[in-house]
Image 1 (cartoon, rainbow, N blue to C red):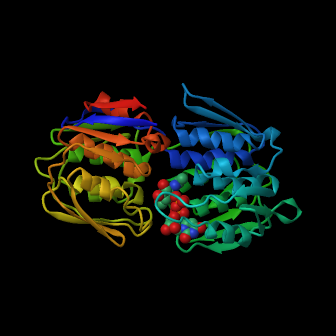
Image 2: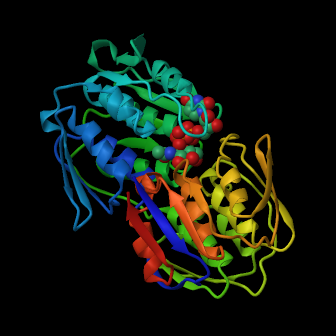
Image 3: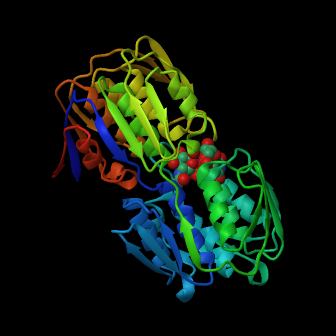
Length: 422
Ligand code: UD1
């Protein structure tokens, strides 16, 4: 298992390229199953979750070719014959459950393992199942697998209201609905850029989705989705992570390129309260750390609100701010496993219910800490960058799921991170 050994104290200076979004790429890959022929998807990040999902898709007989140099993925469902996603792959990555909607939409039958829990508590799929049922699927359970059938091979379509609004369930219902016989309506649909990008790409290949970018999606089923090209968007969470890293490391001045500020929602407005230098270009964002770092409290919300995927990083930054702040997560209330690890480094943080209370300007000192999930891990790396001395972050396989060559990118702008394979 790999670990990172980090020497803290260096500012970040230079240009950092932002990779394609993992969370936006996965729905596009699943959508490839709906097409008549090969679909080429651009800007795919080289991440373990992408390799895992490639294998999930290949189980069905769909051809998947990954051109890692050009970061393009070809998904060709012409040979699709096996309508199943097995437990040993689905348990590695919850988004594999997108295969339920994709297989239902393409062949009218899916046998997909239930994903199970995850590092920050139970993550239900009730909305996915109730939504597919509302679209006309017959759902049954068999030894931990969900079996979903479309009567006569094609879903009739129907209406469903999400409560709460769920990214994953919206994606699954879209995948199931675009090739249904009739029209479907999703109310309180997720408006995250990952969903918007899926709708735009599907519409370009012949789908009829109306209301893209709003919480009311109307999907008129079509007979076919054509082969062609889909474009992935830049990773907004990687963008936000590096913005926060630059703000918390004194003397930093970084320019993020190949990014899209538009997809950050209200994050930029919240970030601007930190009084850093902030310059936004067409596809660049420059952040210069300020002379002081004010404390700013945040509460997560659905898009365009503050993303739950950035709260651990924000809390880590707030350990270096003047004064006290709170970080509250309304989306995933248990997502605070990083708190005890930050405390090991000397942070003054207490957690109760769905909130972390942070008293700022702690002098962090290097120690060994343990990654517990993707976003917790990156925040420990950031804590290591600001800490005095040497920090070891163990189990960085979590990071490899969602951050492309994180240590190389950060080292190129002045960090000192060594990957050690044990
Ligand atoms: C996606 C992202 C994840 C991000 C999350 C919220 C991917 C692969 N993952 O996860 O990084 O943190 O959005 O932005 O894109 N819920 C239910 N029942 C359901 C489904 C969800 O109650 O059937 C609840 C969840 O418990 C949570 C809320 O809905 O409180 C939002 O979750 P959801 O948007 O579904 O997250 P994911 O799609 O799993």
